[in-house]
Length: 533
Image: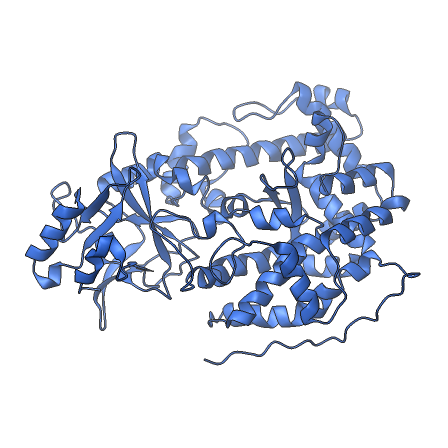
């Protein structure tokens, strides 16, 4: 396997004397030193999808951790506890930023850590999530079962496929690799806080809240967590580190978006004033799914200067709310455009109506993986067994297999492993009594009560769906190239359902694969008899 050797392309920065304290720019020295190597590694997995060596995976992981800790000044606990669900739930705001909220981290039990990634950074994180993280989770040391989320559901996982244990140690290792004096999270936060002394009080408040240091009232804390203010704070941090020009180049936004970002970073308070007026308007005219935009008189009474901006912001907020409402109906399974259009028309909205095409343009699975089966759309597909976007094909050396006829997003429900659920003992009896070519379709598992069960899919058709060939049983095995993972769900009625969810983006024409997971100790030793694997 050919892999590029990781090398530093920049010389270490000079050791700073005590009389010359670190500056915000110095805090990012390791990010500048490692960036060329980091981008070269990303170029191997996207778009070519070459496997990475362990050291290369580590560098990608450490660089992204350092981005969160040093560039966005988040505590190590944020890195350690950020979840896949929080990544998938990120929101987008102008100019071209993705805002992420991390709800649980040891150092901030009562506050939500929120930070804004630039479009370039979001691309890095997405490549890690769709290309590098699946490789980490496929590690032989990773202990994965059919009912876990991989890495305990954490976004950042180690080379063993487990949650990050100590992000501070990873940050220190990155500094050691590039022979730089270590900069800790605490040092960086203190240095940037000191550098805010020349900013206005409003800007100081923005930065303090970005670092979750605000001691303001609950209402003000909520206001400061608005996505646009999170982005403004991120831009201010870049300005303090002398990275304004680099930021503008990487954003790739329109000229007007660049101008807005530059004005904000240079201290313009207009955005703050508009936001304050908008917050005031929301107190009496909150954004609702079925409400009408406040009329001009109401907006003028709130702010004559910004009444037009208030109109546009209210409509945009309602549009986002309506899009989320539509997406939530379909959960973690992408619907067809006609189905979305029919459901939107059913809502009875007359103005400010999202189009089905716009809803699907940037479609991503929504909601928790834990509640994927609660979606009525998914339940209907399980009940009717009419999974779209899949086709059965003949694959050389394997026989039958299943390929995608449309693109599937990471975390999406692709299909289920369908068949009568019997006891493990009955499953073993059926396995022993069926023909060898039909014996490879018994899915053994342990349900939520700890009882060993089996999905009996040895027959191409089940009794409950005559004339329909179920697809999950035909998905082939791969431990290293798996793009699906099975997850067990139990309905309130006690029915056990195994859904197959994508672990990364799946392209058109790609074969669907999941790790059957049969080891010598699997299924209480029954795995020894499963010669079909």
